[in-house]
Length: 233
Image (cartoon, rainbow, N blue to C red):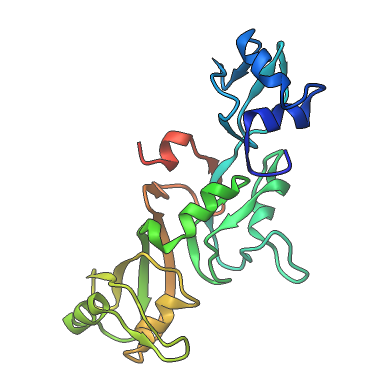
């Protein structure tokens, strides 16, 4: 397909010997199936992962891949890097070179990294409007107090970008440890938010993105996600 989403008649004309105008006849003759069901309209929308079958022949056999990884320290959130190992080096999957990273983590930040070949899903995950909570466990160099909770909830002004962060929710776990929930992903946001208090982040670990959590996945390991999991069902 030349685009991520297409009308059925356009898809048929681009992937078979039939023209746009032929698609109505093919529909009437019940010769087209979309994801296992009879096609119902020439305007029906299909994507790069929709299985379209014409006269028993599959015109599109691309498979959407959704994967989670528990990233260790010392790996780059990139597909290639000239100096350091990347998160793809930890993955064994025949389509791994088709994957891109959804929400990168810094070199020394650990935890949940999502990978996919579904651009529409990764854009949805990344949009602030989606308001998906990202959960982090943070270890600090200085003791925490209740002032942090209120300041994070109100938002912190970043003068460089001239923005104020969206409300974030902080739970103090111990004197030097906290759990942070935020819906944004600004550059080094967590470290900069604690930097407001001149409190250095010693360790940062992401445990969840929206409905997807590590759930005991071993460090350095990955696993495939189902459509139901990524949709929180």
